[in-house]
Length: 433
Image (tube, rainbow, N blue to C red; front, side):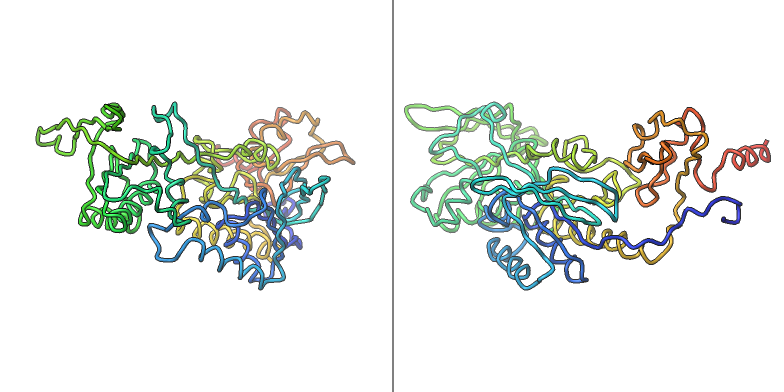
């Protein structure tokens, strides 16, 4: 009993320190390495047969001097040195039971002849499933062709030294749409400088909103200008891609000097046009959301719009999101996510097992509960389950955030927040009146 005469809901319980990481890209690798160093056993599952994710597709990093493939190679070496990290490729999560500190994950591993089901006990799940890129003719109003390529296709040419496919000493254009991300802007600036130096090309960048609000991006933009890259500001609606006598031409209204009343009509022939792909949630997000029972943000990434949660937390305790799966993240942001998730995970699994939980939790009176399931349906944190013996609802302490939604929704008034009973609140209100 506590000083208020109520049951003390604080417990000291040993939680499973093992962690499951979904995704083998940079975010997943960094998270696993940082988690395994303190002694947790980490299992990484990757849907494909290769680790490294989108970083393997990049020729260079706009905010780092390190080669992308070297970066991944170093992370893989760190993985190999650590016996507490297990990697399972060609695998996916198909079921998750339990609560924070005591989850049971069912994993499907694809092999040549059959699918193997594997169950493991874990204390936390870290989602690092990344994103997908997409190029749609409808979105851009232009058909991809031999001389109209995506940014990742250019990166692939540069990685494989396929320089013969890149025009030399000719006009090369980049087109950044209005919704281009800071990652696309950084990569375009980086590649534009390289093409200018390597091939002596005339490089043009068509843009409406150049996003340079990240570390080093404004300096990169100024460097591109100093190196002769030409920037033409325009609206997407003021840009036409035409062909005249076999020559590809961009017809545009240059609004770079619109503020002083000068708008120029330009026609620029080009030998190659490069357009960055859109960054979008992966196709598996909806399935994974159902399995994990966590919410999506307004843009359908795993980024819950809740001021009471930190950036890597989900609406469900014990499940964290890092990297590109929660929105547009660059390399430094991805690594920061991974380290934040590691701190949150260790705090949950280690600190909570040694110290008592002082947060206010909901408590259900079994004598009043009619098992109408209202609390289970309305709890945003999946913190209420059914007690099979008594056939009543039960709050799982570790999963409860103490938000109080269930207390207001319960039709029989069977739920109270500890320290905030109806009698206490009525008494306080009475003293104020």
